[in-house]
Image 1 (cartoon, rainbow, N blue to C red):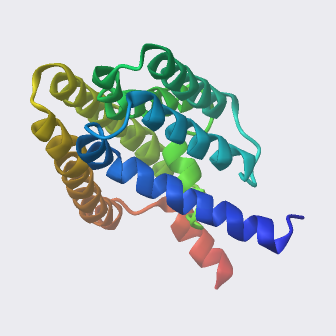
Image 2: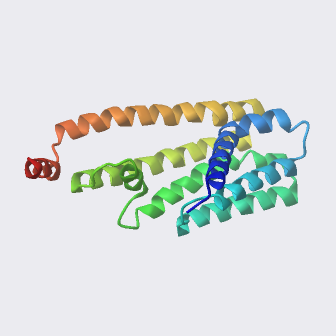
Image 3: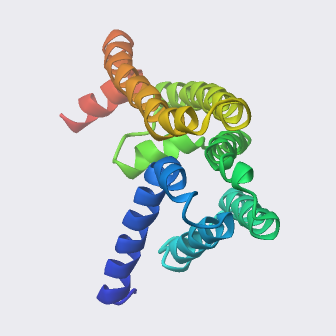
Length: 204
């Protein structure tokens, strides 16, 4: 059991990490003229470390790989003190999550199915097939975003890099999520799951 103060502090750290991730491009854009790059790398690593210190769940091997990747990125920025390298963080995050999703396909339960079960969804063969295919679509989207983020980091002006990675990419993901929710409702209304039907009959 975790003490209540540690749970609340952990949630605060999660909120801080979420804000830092979303606002990162704009923080770098407005702060790079006032602070050295190693300052951003230090803060990023500190927030990430706190995230895992206060995590209430056991970290899987794939999550450790993401942590190690981001840690190496922070160390490289610290050593090089390169403002250019800071711009590759959004691309690195997108690529890391794509690899995380890809790794989950090698097991019995893709990461999308894990998320669905966390929210109480019933696992059936039809839903398992859907979540596995959805995981593949997410991998493609994350790789696409990583490629655009990489291009913006190496070839676009700073303000366009911040615009895409701090706003347009989130609009892209939000649009995809909205479309997927609508399609999911259509898909499961059109394709009746025999396992759920049988469960419903047994409960009557």
